[in-house]
Image 1: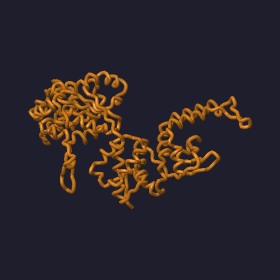
Image 2: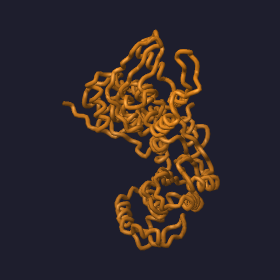
Image 3: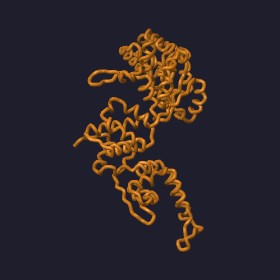
Image 4: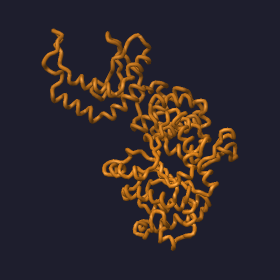
Amino acid sequence: MTNKEKLETYLLFDKKKTPFLLDEDNNGKTIMLSGAWGAGKTHFWKEEITREQEKVQRDGKKVDKYSDDEYKKGLHSQLKDKEKACIYVSLYGKTSLESIELDIYMKAYQNIVGDADFVSKTCSVFTTVGRNLGNMAHKGAGGAFTWLENLVDKDKFDKAGKYLENGGLICFDDFERKSKDIDLNDLFGFISQLVLEYKCKVVIILNSDVFTGKEAEVFRNVKEKTVNKFLYFDPSIEELFKSISDDENYKPLKDYKEDILKAIQETKELNARIYIQVLDNCLEWLKVKKTLDEKIVRVLVLGTFNFVLNHMVLDYQLIVSNHNKDGYLIDYKILSNYPYFFKGEIITQNVDLKEKYILRFNYKFEEVLNRIKNEISVKAIDIQKQKITNSYKYSETTQKEYYEWLEKNEIELKALWKYGYRLYYVSDVDEETYNEIAQFIKSGILIDV
């Protein structure tokens, strides 16, 4: 059973015992769901656990997202059946604890009743009250705002609280995007009081390394007091890709998903957002060009990763090789503006050129960088006597300049090494096709002319 399957079973779909999120004994507990940045924690929570959108559009009709034999009711529906709210709160753009609590009340009521008019009025009130929220009187994290008595319909806020009591669930996400106006210590205190007053469950989605400086110290101090359960989301590349690519929107890519996954695995990157961009680019290319093959897929995938991660679009190049007694020297113009040690590399003989290229450039960038640093500091050789002299190949000043240059350009060089050299893909297709793909990735525009 994979990590993702274990989490799904433990949290919601365990048939042998009551799952954690449905067990009333766990009311009043806080769970932290962490994992690598980009691993798809939010996607996992929304699409695999809560499943707020249980139905999808197929052939003009709304049908269950899962077939009868594999359909599992999501947490959103299961709690709604019990008249308990299951809400997701993004901290993105929130500037005060009051704005967060207002969002909680609004969503809790809408979650069960679906009163669009109430939501509209509440949003309008919130806009009107605006920045003054922080100065309003407040009874505590679990109580209603005293100022709410004169706003909208307080009765609906009371009902919203009941939908959270004894079994409702609140998920907090996007901690790294919260306003600096919200003190982290106050935020966790607010969450703790919510749990105590409502006896609801709280899920916190974040990574411990999301905080830096003073906030990192605060987080270390408060998390042990606030969080009752720590869970780690650690999917494989294949798992994450499958969970995203199974979306009905990507059905036209059915025959190409294996090639897309293969190219993604070359990058060794675990990033849900980029996977979505890759799939969207492949889907758009197929819709416009009506054709897609393994080589085009590879260029689309690796080109998209390189652009998103490194803001680079490589120029079209062919491998140019010059044979000498030691092997083949690869001249790659992408790095021609850099010092000589990045202009070419010696590779082994007696294998196909493409294979030689892959074999030679499968080294890690750190290994290459260390070899270059050693080359810079090596002692000079007396050619006549074939012995090392007491002088260095480069002067102390030149060595310092090279080291400083390497340090200054290390990030860019690492990206070029990985996507320009080791994962070399620009000659997988002809120059015209490559340039069209590169321009599409860079501009986001694809027109069939």
